Length: 620
Image (tube, rainbow, N blue to C red; front, side, top):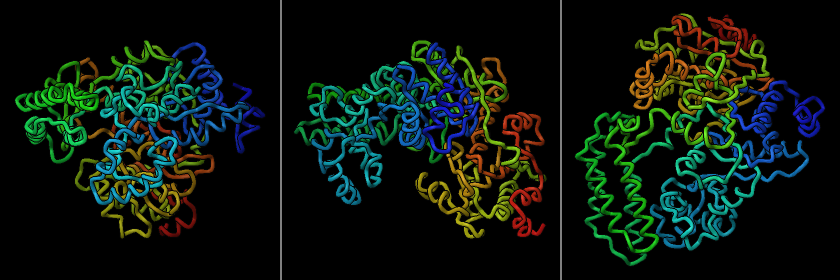
């Protein structure tokens, strides 16, 4: 690997601005060894390591087909448009690479040919159709990402393939199917770019979704457990059942068949009664004892619908299989203790997931599957990745930890203000808003503020919008990527966000010079899956806080911290407003896990970091 990553190597000759980094070379060597030996690898590579090229080049040199699975579409795009071409230039050859997405990302020709404009339900859909119809004549891929407009979710749900609607190899239009064409191209590629969800869909389906491959690289691997829990669980929603009954009605009209109205009415009535009894208006509620007298009628009604659809052709058989699949998921809610699953309700849906994914991943992926390489900037909670490996059931694997090449001692300042109240105190929110306003004056905007909850997000929005001389962007007011683009371009703007913005946000340059974190990111009490995992740790003889809650929060805080410094020229302040970093014994564990930046506890140091104009503006 030295020939590629060393000074004067292939990357230095072909990639403008390339700097040889020992951390990147060490990661590439470890990946190459795993691909040769077949031994799994868990590798933490600090921000700025250049991890994508460090696994792409040895993967392309391995002679195996390799799947790279990411957590975000943004990283998929970066790999396809930047990193893979850079690797190809360094290797001096073309690379046969394909991006493969879930079926719901592709237009379904069968839906279009069968139902046509019957799929348009709203006036705005007709406007979108005027753009989509000529695009359908030109597109080679049928990929939603290539559409010149963003269709409504309801319209795309009608146009897309959808794994529940697909009749597979029995489809009369299989030879022109966009999703099948993508899978065929992937089967001929040496490198396939997918996402975590598609990879676990392949596991859940016992194969057939992805082509055969000798190795998989899980980038953003700190998110694997959550994705696995989602795909190894299930969900029954009002939307899914209503979509099924609408499809049955539409198929009956098209095929001039008849399903007794009473059968469909029973399904919808049983759904309404079940969900009305268990679903909350907001949030999640754990169902320790689901109302069996309401679940069973729904299971029976769906089974009756399958019976009514039998024998009327392939389209109706597919609808029948969807009925049975929904019935099986609803039946899984009957006994929440079966096989260690937790059941909960949300507005208009009920879901279940395995409390612990370790056993299933151990049996279905790590032991029998391809060589696995897990890469992320945050996989350790101390000196090693023991916690993450235990959560994923990855018993046998080599570990590698390489630090960031960034100089946090000169590029960053960690601000821990004195005098903040306990986060549980009523006055905490007001003090956070006061501190944020003062910090924004010093940084002249240019800030990302990460909150621990939507409630805190709303309080900050009310306090800041219209009350600071900067554009205040708020999560939820526009699509995520549009918000991030505005934040990048409007340099003095302030972005208030929570949840997913703690990860996958890459804003190099001065647009992000201040990162504020209101609280340590412990999961909210009462979340059903989190609560069940804590209980499982205790039941196994562990300490739910020290062995689960604390390391999970440490990983999340490290992810949040990592939003600030994204290049060698970046400088900025991370302000963590939670006093528990100083007042609780576990605060030391959090601080030890963060990059080693100088610490300060008063705004004078923050003002000094930002320069003399900030000092003057603050009156220091």
